[in-house]
Length: 141
Length: 410
Image (tube, rainbow over all chains, first blue to last red; front, top):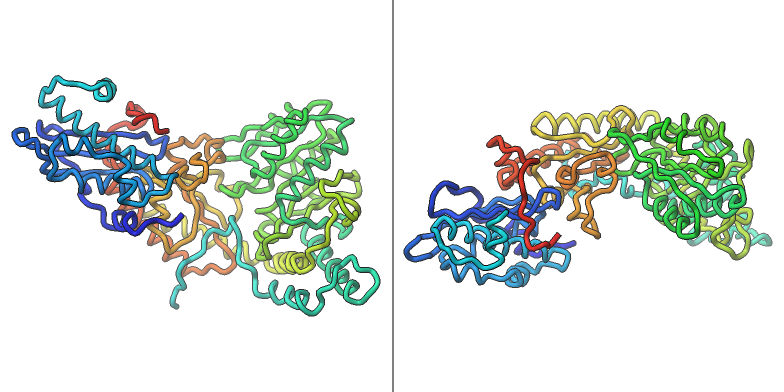
C-alpha cells in the first residue's frame, strides 16, 4: 500500500501534537475509537466563548499513518473556524485531501467523529442545552 | 561499512535466493532444459539426473529416503496434498483430524474445506507460550482419528512445538502425523525418523531457494503412507502429483537444502546471537515491550515484540527503510489482527502493536544495530503522539476505560 505524499508529510511532520488543559472551561476534549480496534484519537480545541472561533487545537493518536494524518489534518482545518463551521467538516473532505484508499476511509470517519466529540464536550461545558441525537449518545458515554 | 538500504528483516515471509543456488539452477534454463519425464533422449536424462540428485539433497537434510520426496509447487500445495490426500485415502478408517489454532492458513483453510465435506476437525488451543498441551492432544484423540497436523515452528512467533513427543503419541495410536516444517527445515535439526513424522511440507523460498517450488515428505516404511492425488494427469511422482516437474526450481530447492545441511549448525548460532542482540538493544532502551511466545522453544532467528501504546502500521511507516511485518489489523488485507497472537491470549490492543523480525543468512551486525536504533527512535516518537501512552503515564488504567465506539465503524 503506497501512502500519498500528504499522508507521509503529516506522519513525518504532524501538526499540533500535544495536549490542552482538560479542566479549562474553554477547552473541549473528544476521545474516540478503541485500542482493540487499533485506532484511538484524542482531539482537543480551545474555543473563544464570545466569538465561537477555535483558537487552538491539539491532537494525539494511536493508529496507523492514515489515522495520524487524518487527525493532524483535522487540527489544521479547525483552527480559525467557528464551532458551526468545524461541525460541517465531512470525512469525505479528509479522504479527498489525503487521497485515502477505501481500506483507510474509516480513519477519516474517526477524525470527523473526534471533531464532533470535542465540540460536543465544549458545548456541554458552556451549558448549551441543544442536543442532537448524535450528541446525546456521545454525551451519555 | 556502509549499510545498504532498505534492510530486509522479514525472512519468515520469504528469503533472497542464495547466489550459489542460482548458479546451480541457471544451466537448466537454457542449456540442459529438457523435461525430466522425456525418457528417450539426453535432454530428458540430464534433467532427470539433476532432479534425482535434488531428491537426495532434500532427503539427506531430513533423514529420509529420496523415494519419499514428492515435488510440488510449494508448501501450500504440499500441505493440501498431505491433508486432503490422506483424508480421502483413509476415509473408510475414519473422518476425524486434529490440528491447532496457530497453524498456517494452508492447514486451517484445508481443514475448513474438509469440514464442508463431512470431516470433523479438532482445533487444539495453545498455551500462553504458543505450544500445544500434550494432555489435551491425547484427550482429543478418538477411535476414528486419521490425521494429526501440527507445525514444527510458527511463522509469526517462531515458537517450536513438541514435535517428537507428538510423533510418539501419534505412533502409539496408529495415527498419521503431518508436520508443516516450512519455517524449521534448514534452520533447526529436523529428523523424520527421530521425530516420528509421516508427512512433511517443505518450502524452497523460505530457505534461500526460489519461489514456486516445494516438497512433501511421504513416509514409505513403518508405516507406509498412501495419498490420493489432488492433481491428476500423467501420474508423475509415483502417481501422487501429476505435472511436468519444475526442474530448475527443484534443483534450486535441492541446492538450498544442501547448503542448509552444511551451514546450519554455524549459521543458527550466528543468527541466534544477532537476534539476541536486536532484542537486547531494543528492550533495554524502551519500557512496556513484550515478547510474544516462548523464548525457550523458539527458532534462533525470530523475535516478535509488542510495543505498547504504538500501533504497528505507524511503526512500520516510521522505519520505512527496514522490511519487517506486524500483527496489526491495519497491515492485514482483512483488517483483522493476527489470529496467532489472539490464540496466545495477547490482547487485541497489544496485537496491534506487534512487530515480527526474521533475521537471515545475509543480515549483518551493522544492520541489526541500525534497525534497533530506528525502532527505538520511532517508538519513542510515536509514544509522544499516543493518547494511550499519555494516559498510562498519568496512571490511568486503560483496560478499565469505556470507549466511545465512534459511528459504529468497526
